Length: 339
Picture 1: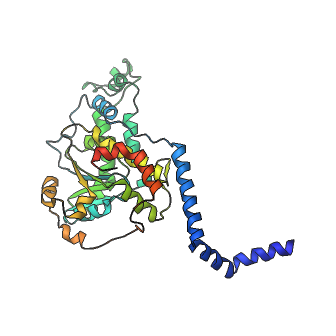
Picture 2 (picture 1 turned 90 degrees about the vertical axis):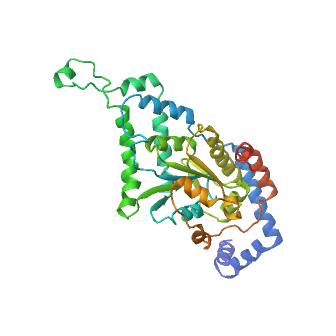
Picture 3 (picture 1 turned 30 degrees about the horizontal axis):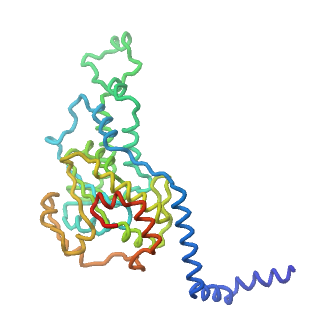
C-alpha cells in the first residue's frame, strides 16, 4: 500500500500527471465541471446575503451641520483649492481611462485609489457620522470665549471643553492637504484630485464639506459589463472594508449600493454623471465636460492607446445575469440601465 501511494504521488508530480490534468480541464467534461463549480459558488454567495452598509447622506449632513454651527473656516468664496474627485460605481468601470483623459490637462494630477483598501475616506465619514446626539455634538464643539484664561478655567465647567467644530473640520482637511495636495504641488501640478472605486454619496458629501469648491465626476458602467471584466481578469479577491467581493452576488450588491447612493445627493451638488458607454461610444460632449471642470483636456491622446484589457467573454452566463439583475435592479433603474 505504501508503494502504491508513493507511486501515485510521484505520478502527479511528474510531467505526465499535470499534462493529463491540463488536458482534462480543457475537455468538454472539464469545462462542464469548471462551470458547475462556478455556478455553485455563485448560488452559495447569493444565499449568504452578506450585508453591505453605507453611510446615509442625510445623517452625515446632520453631523456636519452640528459641527459647523459656528466659526468661519474655509468657505467657497475664499478657498483657492478646487480638487476633482472621480468616483465610480465599483471596479472595471473605465475609471482609469477617464483618469488618463483628465490628466491630459498638464496642470492636473489625479491620484489613483490612494491606499484604496484602507477606505480612509469612508472611515473618516463614519467617524463624522458616528454621533448619537446632535445636541451633544453642538455642546462639545461650541465656540470658546475670547477671554479664556487660566483663572476662568479653574472656576468653570470644563469637563467637555473642546475646540470648535470648525477647527475639527480644518484639521480633517489638513490631513488631505498634506496627504494628496502638497505632494501634487511639489511635483509642479497646480490642481489635484483622485479617482476612487469604493466611495459613494456620503463620502462625496464629506469631501465637499472639506473642499467647498470641489468638483465630482460620477462614472458608471452597466453592471453586466463591469462584472465580466472583473471576473475575467482573475484578480485577487477585492474588498470594501471587511466585505469580500468575489462573486456576481457580492459585486452586484456592492454596485447597487453605490449606484443608489447618488440619488441621495441634494439639488445643486456639483456632480457630473458620465456613462462609460457614452465615453467610448462617441456620444460624449468633452467640451461641455472640460468647461464644467475648468480644465482643458485632449481626450484623443488618452483614447488612442489601449492600456489593459481583461474581458474574455462577451457577456455573463445566464445565471450571473439573473443574479446581477436580482441584486442590482434598483441601482440600474436609478442610473438608466436596462435589465
